[in-house]
Amino acid sequence: MQDFISEDDLDTFEGWLRYQAVDLATIPADQLTPWRELYDEMKAARAATPKVGLMKLRPGEHRYAVALRDGADLWLTLWVRRSPKGDVYVFQPRSDRRWNPHTSYHRDGTLHLKGHDHKFFVQQRQPLTGSFRGTEHLGAYAGHGGKGIGAVCDPKDFSGVIEVAPGILGPKHGNVAVDLVAPGGAPMDLMMHDHEEVARQEFRDAIPHVVIRVQRFAPK
Image (cartoon, rainbow, N blue to C red; front, side, top):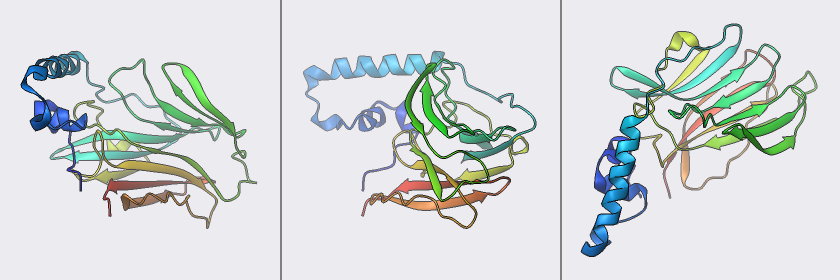
């Protein structure tokens, strides 16, 4: 099994190389300097990027969080927002506010992904009304960060929080799947042979329900 790569690993040259799928022992001595320069640039950029901190969230809506436990700290890595109008959004906090990656599923059935103010993967799905049937999958999200991004999770800001232990979600491993499900239904079968589910929660504040699953990398 490939070893789990944590945020702390990215603070070491060897760990950062493993993230790049490069074995330090295989790099010829005369080619080591360019790799080291790239690593130093990455470290400097991370150090210069401000942390997200505690976000100001809107009142009057349902929010569901996935958070990473790190000792006494709880870091927000993904959250789902259901607006008062019934639209559903999936957010992943990022230190670079210009990026702002998120998925939007609007009440009229329009779904799209967005980042850097550009929409892509635009689809028309079923509307989020009383006629909703079955399941609509909103994606399986990887690339999780905690203290490096620094998005503080205050459980009081959310309708529910799935707390994840260390070693499950990281910069390279693990994912969080989000589905909209009619009452009595089930989320989409992800059919990922190299992942196993470690947590699931169904939020039933409104219809359709929001199902969030956490999966860790566990190749057979």
